[in-house]
Length: 259
Image (spheres, rainbow, N blue to C red):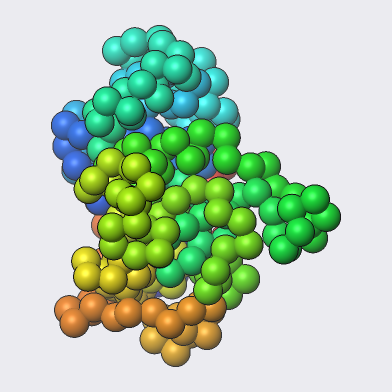
């Protein structure tokens, strides 16, 4: 398949969908994470249980919802519950995956969605804040991020720590009382896929998308990256995945229409 047969958003969603496991649980918001979960349910993880912060638990989403409280997030679901109960499930260790985003992410996977600038009261930019992101990243087993890969976003140190990654490295999450074994898992960008080094907790490139170079990734990253010894080329979407994505998951191109 030629590169012109898919766009970067379709590639990111497809790659993210493959990291979700059958018979696991995932909390998602709307947008690309929801599309990834929907595609995963139709391919590698038919018994994936999708959860929404507003209370939808285990829906079989007919089409892309426009908000986490959209009636479609309850369609043929297991339960119609509440935000408190979704968070209680996270606290009980019953949520395997979550997807989060932010304006900044650092080498340890810490996220900032609060302010840009060094003065909280007079920031250059004020952002929406945590919502439930802090709780999800603190309590879910694996946190994934889908984001454009630009230097302004991948920074040496986040201006404000909204959502914990590995904080300052291995053991620091546990030192502040977060559950052992939880934390950042994957970062899927329009240039590559990154995981985290077991010894240092730092972001590590695992695969590079077709046509992308190591130099381009480094130019667009504000900190020194680690590189996997088994660096691969990211596998492109199959025709089946693209057909499902375009015809069933996002037929109106709300998400995959974004370049």
